[in-house]
Image (cartoon, helix red, strand yellow):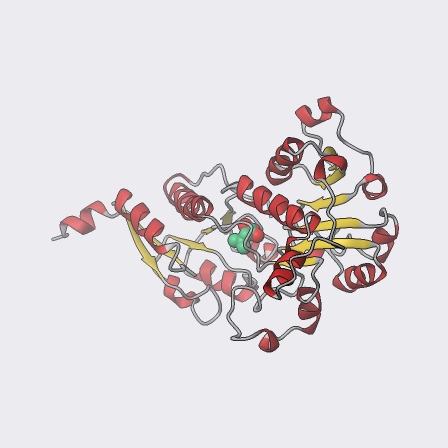
Length: 342
Ligand code: COI
């Protein structure tokens, strides 16, 4: 005879890589969805852990390391067809293997665009108002003003690269500060189009903007889009903001542009070699195993942060809830409004 629990439960979802800050949200979701058996592990989904998914109907996960062909083949061999990511980026999913195994993938396209936009502008304001320099000076007993005079955002032109949800949320905040905003995207948002903020080419954006604010997903086409040539086309003293994807910026080119003064400052919440480095504790600055990153971190006009723009209570809650909802919906109906084209 089936137990009451067995009669109620109609599906099993395994959630990988569940962090301590996600667990309470997952537990709450589980309580609210008694027909779903939720199994969770702090381990990431890889060759060593994929067997734990055997017997599940769907997999929910977030990680920056790749979802490899061998992992996806294994999931396929267990009959698992639904993989729901708790984040936006799907660039680490082996698309060919997912298709070969008929695995449908969902993401969470908007858990809180405002979280990322607010952080991006916060970092820009810290750069413009020289707060890292003042913090350092004050810690050493130096309370003088000069020579660290600031610039005002309301006097500047911000060039927003990509006007998806995050780009648009950032534009709202930039406008609130009174900045002039211009934008580039292949797709034009109708409202922004009416406002006439689009420029025709990235080069035009580079030539006109005092600040470049990147909000594009990673694609094959935009890898290292900010390289030597792109920096050469920008205004002297430009500010670079990258809360999007590390791979958009050629780090060596950025370092050169910082050294020459072409770039006046940069706020980097992403970094091309961040996997395995960000969200880890190395115990001391010296032990961070990336010299290029440390070169950037040592500069007062560069703000490196370890991919935390997204990291708010609201966003983390939504990442867990929306991914679990999407996976459940796929299992129940084969449909979800969060399916991604790989
Ligand atoms: C994404 O959602 O793709 C992000 O970049 C945030 C991630 C660190 C959870």
